[in-house]
Length: 64
Image (tube, rainbow, N blue to C red; front, side, top):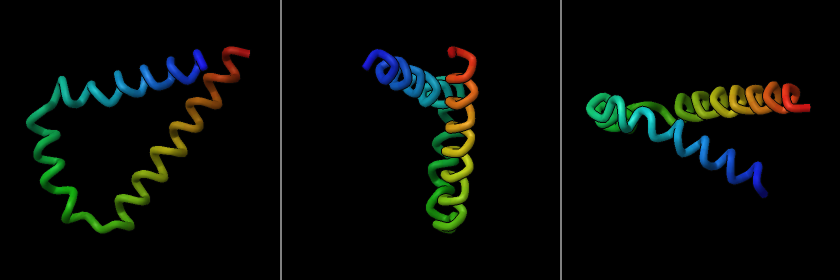
């Protein structure tokens, strides 16, 4: 459970960085998102998930 809480906390930190550092650019990106195709958004999401899994796998290997 401790690991899940740490992961959730880190996710919140990383999600908050763009909001804190680049609020105007983030608003502009949010305006442009509806124009993107669903397949493009899914591809971006898949790539981000795979990169996240790779980071978790590498991090887990460093801890063991």
